[in-house]
Image (tube, rainbow, N blue to C red; front, top):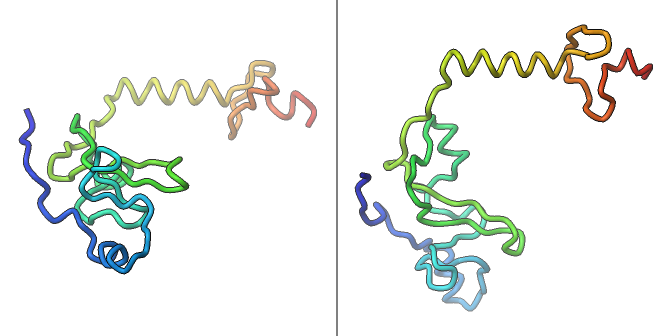
Length: 137
């Protein structure tokens, strides 16, 4: 079971709080989670200690079952990226040698033309069903 604790640093962004106090509306800024149910930040304004799954992956980590503790919204709320704590993240799992062999076999099959049987340097287009030499393109 993973430990539960509060955020290690403040959730508020002073620059965005200052904009609000001056009467400037900042869309998607809800650090307390009252409006969206989870702390929400605009694009590029998330706290530095929270990471998206891609950012965790670049650091060799994965969320590891933890629930997202915040989110980023952009493009009028149509896009969302969930944010996770790095201190609760687990190391990425590595593929076994059997899995790597199966993936290599599947990718080799995608490069092999069913008509002439040659392995190409590109994936055979599914729309054509055969290599470019066999289709005459």
